[in-house]
Amino acid sequence: MKDFKKYYEINTSPDILYSALTNAATIQLWSGATAVMEPLEGTEFSLWEDSIVGKNITLVPGKKIVQEWYFGEQPEPSIVTILLHEMKNGTSVELRHSNIPDDDYENITSGWTENYFGSLMDFYRE
Image (tube, rainbow, N blue to C red; front, side, top):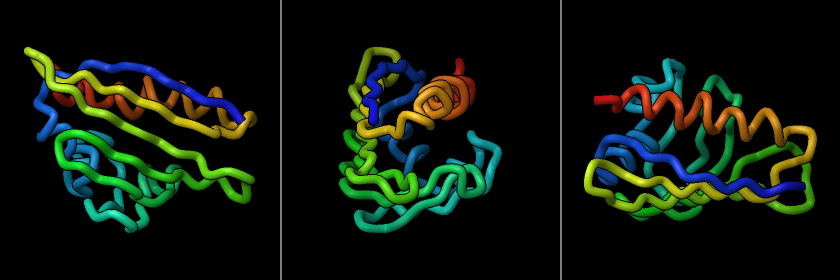
């Protein structure tokens, strides 16, 4: 199991970015794929046609998203924490992903940068 931490800068406000991460219709706009997501704690979600599945644990609008991502049977939950920090020209995103299975690490970490936050950066590019 490995951990991953990275920062991203996105050209939109924390409130708009929070909605883009928790609203199924908006997720579909920037990801180009079907999404199942309710912005409610305790609800399960599915992104990229079940490529990413999990549960929303903590949701603080405009500030924080904590999710458990499912990777089959593993001893400890894989937890994603996204913290949104307002900046002068947008949002600084602090991503922490803990307990990533070793076999999935390269795929997950490149996916965060290239697909997940890469797509959001493209979507909100000025």
